[in-house]
Length: 305
Image 1 (cartoon, rainbow, N blue to C red):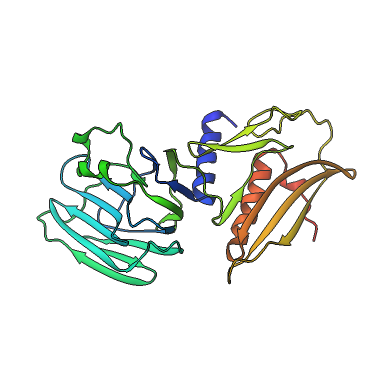
Image 2: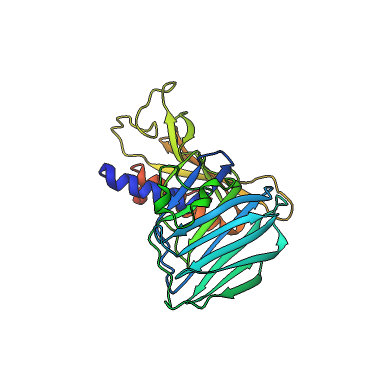
């Protein structure tokens, strides 16, 4: 696999399986591929925060009239948007700065925009001459890059807003996972639907600018995931061991530990994933995908009961 292809697959994997943990650090941001909601579209995500003032989401038309900004204002979600310079604001009834998980959906229907928070909908619409929203920029979470000039921001004051502090996970455009293009000062979230340690053979994992980095200096392996070693024989059997992790309230999780054996000799512990139980299937698929990406053919993988 070439470097470009690997980078794209890694970004898709991260944006699909991992959430983002925002620390409220000045200059932080996460950038996703543009959401095409000029006439119709749905965007959804889950989040938790204790911040009463913070920028969550922003995109615009590159400095003219149209923009959409989702923020926490006085502990409530505030959706502010403009189409052809006709602007309005929607505010949720309930507070979200309680540190609990919440589910939010933004729906665009031509001139009408709907904010749904935990199943409760609030909507508004504008009456411009133009019947659609122009969207030029990518979608930003938690903050906007400081190197974007003011003239390229339709709402320059967004730069001065308090960065988001909390966790955002399971971001979707419709039913699809958007591509994470990059991030700054935003580590991967550690307690969402999936937590993956891609470093093998005792390598130490850390996160830099939203990407996992493996330190292989204390191992006898090398490579991006500490997995490069010449093995003459084809691996024979991969065992999967599952154990129930500690429950948290009514939700509980499963732990999956993949071990690769050859003639009863442990070659490596490939990865460990902790999943919320109702998302376990996706986590299992991610595990198998990671094994394949690391060179283990699915034809030789056996999963023990």
